[in-house]
Length: 116
Image (cartoon, rainbow, N blue to C red):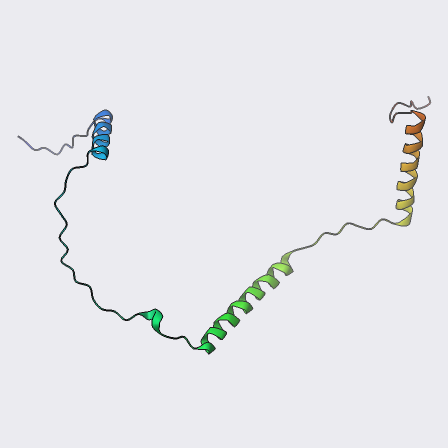
């Protein structure tokens, strides 16, 4: 058998069949032999944390969250609806009353023709 620089690839069909075969019929492997030994390490969660460091950490987080909230609040522009003047309010009321009276008379909006 002669080795050349060529790499032979499997066809897609052969690769699919071998993948399905490996998925359903896995080959038996020899048992795994572990040679490592566990090392005793101290439990870092067993140490008691001082209440002063806890208070400083909570305070720092609260200050940072408040600074972020203030920054966001300063960047947000609230757009308010302009208030109507009393003249605009009266005009709206007058137009509503006219539409109501025309609808009671049976006149449909847009049906009236302008005089020529």
